[in-house]
Image: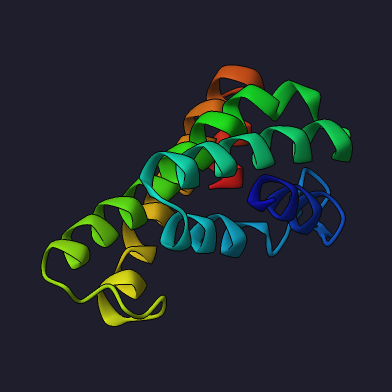
Length: 129
């Protein structure tokens, strides 16, 4: 179900920017990683991102997005693991989870930066950064 939610919020609720699009799908990646048990949040995020790119007309990005979305979920899964060990995982929205936006944003920015270098070229990657 979360893979479908990630797919729909990524592929169908979007704002085009000429070379790609912006979407609320990442928020669903984060939510799935905070709610589902560890590996399931990662898998749902990856599958959702993969199918979103296929449905949105960007098949060349599907595998790259699958990897990046899986890596986006990892900080939240790790955070939840440690909160659970401390018996403090009773809330989805909390300060430690909010702080996980920093590493997951870095994963997205640098993941697509390096993907742009490979697929399109150095100049475009710098401009997109």
